[in-house]
Image (tube, rainbow, N blue to C red):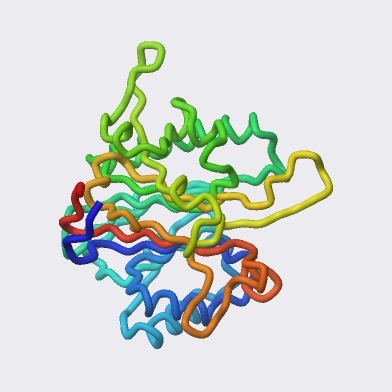
Length: 283
C-alpha cells in the first residue's frame, strides 16, 4: 500500500481501565490529529475529558454515543452533523461517521469479556453474537464500510476472531478482498485483521498490546488483545502502516524499561491507532 492522500479518519482506542491517562491521552490526540476516541472503562469524568482534549488540540470534542448502555465511551471532534449513534450493547457501541473526505464509515468500539470470567468456548459464542450485532448495524447504516476496534480479549489467531460464524477476520488482505466465502451453504463476510502485521518484536512497535506472565505451562507473555478489524470495502483506504500500537507520547513513556505497559502509572494496555487515508491504493 502507498499513502497518496490526506487522512480521512483517525480513530484511537485505549482500554484505560482506571489508569491516570488523561495527559497522555490528550497528547496522543494532538500529535495524531485524532478524530474519534474510543475508551473502555475510563475513570475520567466526561466534562474533564472533553475540556482537556479541547485545550490540547484546539478542537471541540463531544460525546458521540451519549445513550450507550455499556462502559464504552466514544468522543469525536467531528461536527454534530457528521456522526450518528447507531446501536449499543453491554460490550459494544456503534457510531456512523461521515468524515469531510471520503465515504462514511461505521465504527464499532468493543470490550469483550476476558478469559478470567469466560472460557474460550464462551468467548466464541459471544463473538457469534457480536457478528449478529455488527451485521444489524450495517443494515441500519445501509453499507459495510465497517471498522471494529477495541479490546477483544482474544488474539488474532483465536477461534472467536478467525471462525467464519464469528468475526471471520483474516491476515491476508488479498483473501479479505474476495469479500466473503460460502461455509456450509451460507455466505460469510470477511474482515481484514492488520494486527497480524504488528504481532512480534520487529521495531518500532511493541510486540503486542498487553503483557502477562505466570508460572503455568502455556504462557506466551505478549497478547494482542486490542485489535482493529476492517471490512474489505475499506481496505483501499488503509495504508500499509495504517494501524499502529503506541507506546509513548511527547512527554509520557507508556512502556517501562523492558518495553511493557506501565500499568501502575497509566494502563496495562497500549493504545492503538487507525488512520484511513483518502486515495490510499495498492502499490
